[in-house]
Image (cartoon, rainbow, N blue to C red; front, side, top):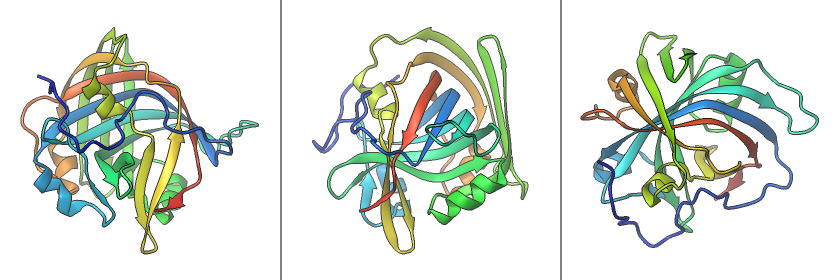
Length: 245
């Protein structure tokens, strides 16, 4: 059952609406057939894994670990549109954090990706991309995602059934999905990268998955039970330049 009350710290409240407008994006992305899989975790288990300068964000007293598989159907220049690489499936492992100024965002433990140029470039920017074999297949309202690192570690599989459209997301659903900054650490510095896209078109969903290997390779505990699951068919993303925090 989803939590019913926010026990956060009174900082900026996550919202389905973008926090900022990105006038000059550095690139554009299309995130297609994206599934949110979330489990509660004790905040004390997550806090030591974060970079100095960010702290775990909580809802109903819990930190939330997510696995988010999706199809990157476009990655390239904003205008004119020039794709940099062919489409691929990405699967990221994440939690939610606050910066020193109270801004909320995402902290990635890993981003599993099959495109070597993407992995190599974004690792230079402090994002923990991992070279993996990833796949997504869809049949009607059911999707299947798989991932395994080239080392043989971090296997992940999920079967997701998409349900009805959510007309008005709850505060908890906004907490899990309404994030407009990605934090990372590179060259001894904490960075915040802003993103912008239309509000998530969210659907209810159910999932049967095997997350233990992927979570374990990231130093995270095995979850108890099936995840809280949401699905979104497509958003058009604009990414701003990273800024030091």
